[in-house]
Image 1 (tube, one colour):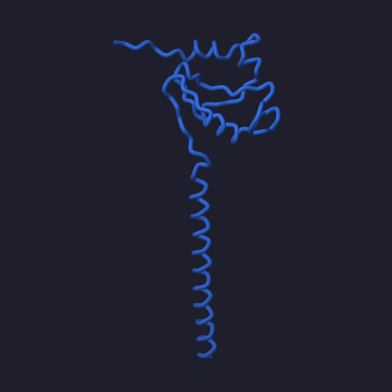
Image 2 (tube, helix red, strand yellow):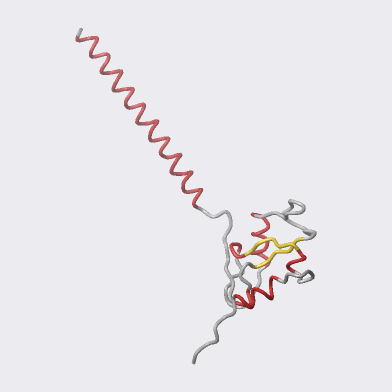
Length: 130
């Protein structure tokens, strides 16, 4: 009986060691996946000082949000324009988070709605107090 219980204990100890190795391996995979998920897929550059525009920012935006008409990340996008949610003229940043696709009828002020004029009125900067 002692021999049998000794064998069981030895098998149990080896099983525990194997389980520890498996758990350690799983923990390493989870840690690596977490680190990769937290790293941005692109380096976002923000231009928040005035009317500066960057083609790099627009390219990054288009990689993440392809053209609604064609689904392409490069080239023309018929009927659509890239627009700043908060206009640069009133302090908006030239950054991916501040860009959106907008139909040309609204963006170009050709129709009855003119987004840019309305936004300049809404987001008007307060005058500097001296």
